[in-house]
Length: 123
Image (cartoon, rainbow, N blue to C red; front, side, top):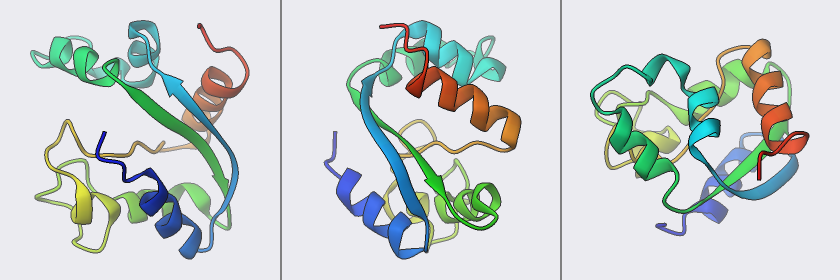
């Protein structure tokens, strides 16, 4: 919504990641439930569904040495107040909910997300 997608991609590429594929998506509730299963019972979950389904997102895959750990460091803590100021969230996020970017913690979650967005889309 804030038109930061190109700036975020520039930061990622300048950190020596190769962007392999990108795709504009509009999340649906079922996808949000797959991406953030731990949040389903949280009091903010309805707000989360509304936010993440309210507009387009950019799904992408990057590759590079130790990509998951390095990308998570570049992305920063989900709470921008706790994020490294040099991280993407430290620079641009406005709240825990509107923190601009999501990354995975491990290879299993990577494959789940890759399949969700680039192989099996619900819509």
